[in-house]
Amino acid sequence: MSNCQGTAPSSGWWIKGFGYFGHQDDRDNLEGYDSTIAGTMLAYDVPLGLDTRAGVGFGYARSTIDGNTNNASTDIDTYQGTAYVGHDQGPGSPMGARLSAGIIIPATGRLCSPA
Image (tube, rainbow, N blue to C red; front, side):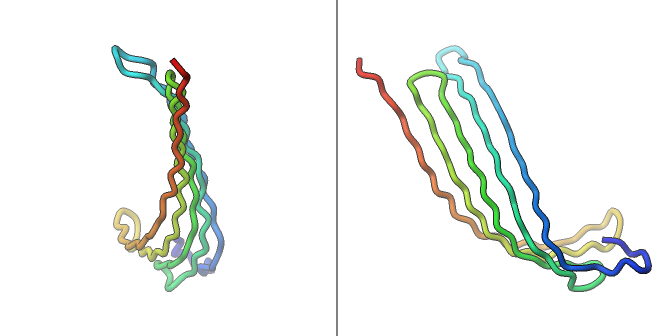
């Protein structure tokens, strides 16, 4: 937020993406894995005053873990709806509140080779 004269707060859309890529080698008797997480959040917020905003948003993320042996894999789709209110009293003094609700839909699989 800006307290400069002539910069009235306005309503608007915002979008933010995120991601993570990881790898763990096999260790001792433990199987290693590769992991990936990617997602985004899309929201719309409005000013409730000079230093206060409220909004609603929707997010999606996909998480994947693939084991290095035994053809093991896990995929998780995460959907989140959120409503939020934020207030900033100035530099170094942020205050806010957030209310969120989400649903997680897991899809897992493991392929086994015949012995």
